[in-house]
Length: 132
Image (cartoon, rainbow, N blue to C red):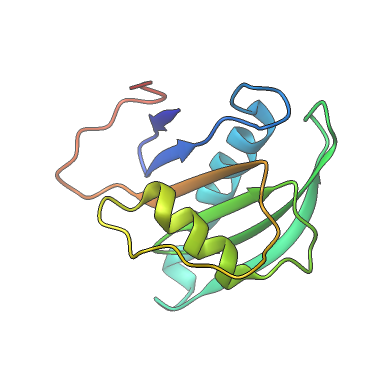
């Protein structure tokens, strides 16, 4: 699923447990994007936060790990807080990047769903929750 707000373009995969996009990860992605937008005037360009949570509104009460910077936000559902971030990001790059590097990964925790948010460029039109 792809949608956008005034500040970010979002992409989310289908959950491997429910077979649908997860409304809980969508809400979390939007809240993280709002927090990053609000923090931008008070933080440097390399500001980044990382953490984990449980998606309470998910039917599976999924654990989720996230990384958020001014350049990109990613949420990995169904992984433990200890999951290797580099492997998760390389997996997400293979899904979301239009020209990804070859994916040759060692063992890593596979997420059941991934959401990504990237800032809108100034010349992209904005329409809240336009589903493409």
